[in-house]
Length: 78
Image 1 (tube, rainbow, N blue to C red):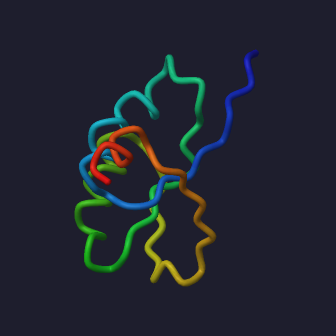
Image 2: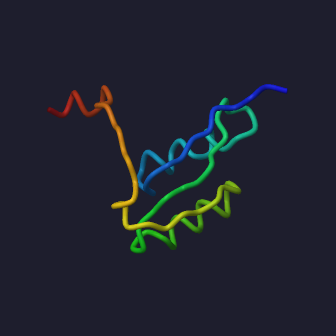
Image 3: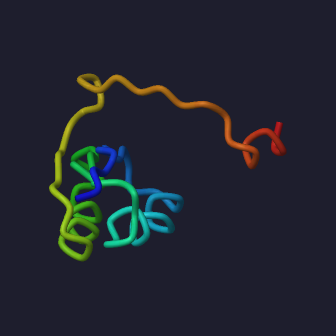
């Protein structure tokens, strides 16, 4: 059995909505462990989690460690 890389997703924005179907899909090399959101976006997160069978975590983000690197799209904007 192939082992999948565990992945946690932070937010419910456009990029999450675009990639979550693939990330949570059967052919993905990832296993989505949770989709984390704030209280404000919790209803949208709950809808996405139910649709793609992903656990939900609601937080204030102060408890999260986040590392991001600029994407090519972000680099074009600057």
